[in-house]
Amino acid sequence: MKVAVSSQGKTLESHVDTRFGRAQFFIIVDTETMDYKVVDNLAVAQSSGAGTRAAQTLLDEGIEALISSNVGPNAMEVFKAAEIPVYKAVDKDVKTNIELFKKGELEKITEATNQGHHHHW
Image 1 (tube, rainbow, N blue to C red):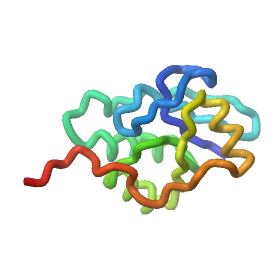
Image 2 (image 1 turned 90 degrees about the vertical axis):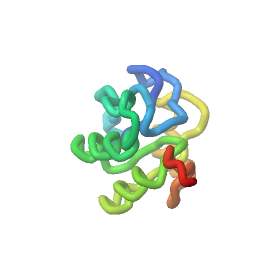
Image 3 (image 1 turned 135 degrees about the horizontal axis):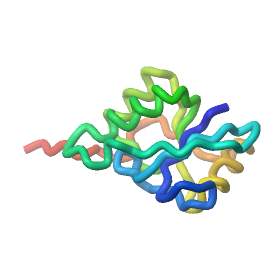
Image 4 (image 1 turned 60 degrees about the horizontal axis):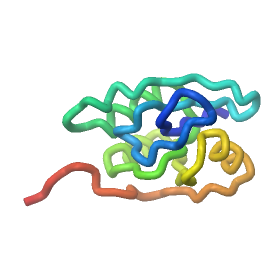
């Protein structure tokens, strides 16, 4: 199974990035082999729409699940529409999160965990 994890670095030992749309990197891990691919998050520099663009990038990579901490409403809609489950990361490294995922010990997120960066006046 191909699982993406938002990450601060480029290895399985890297700490999970608590942000989704503004995470520095995504590490896509094959849970069977633990082989992985690093994807630079090109949405980081966007002034708006980072979550949606990051979500689309991961869908283009063929992920089957996401592990992150804070997923905004627009990105969550993209994942829901694509039927990609989202799980709440624990404050550890990427490898630990994958191991917990494989054991079924990560909490599933079904709603946005933040309001994104839209300002309503």
